[in-house]
Length: 113
Image 1 (cartoon, rainbow, N blue to C red):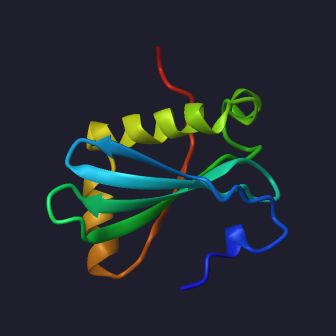
Image 2 (tube, rainbow, N blue to C red):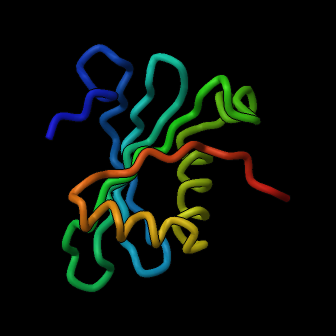
């Protein structure tokens, strides 16, 4: 499957960042879009290592906190994605998407302090 957000010339960073989020082992790649920052996160089973799904986290000018999110580093964006994955808030949608052989696109949201 071709990832359109990471086509040549669209500002990709080739660095991969690995992290553990609850039961998942994840690999994140910066995947900016024309309108804002993004991450493509491959989600693997923490025990077997099998790829379970891919989630694309994205910023958009219509979302609250856009300017603050645009000012964040890759590491800060990964921290937000990790927190969202650890919370379990995406588990049901990840399971549905996996069953349908789809990936998810999730908006970045500013963390609530």
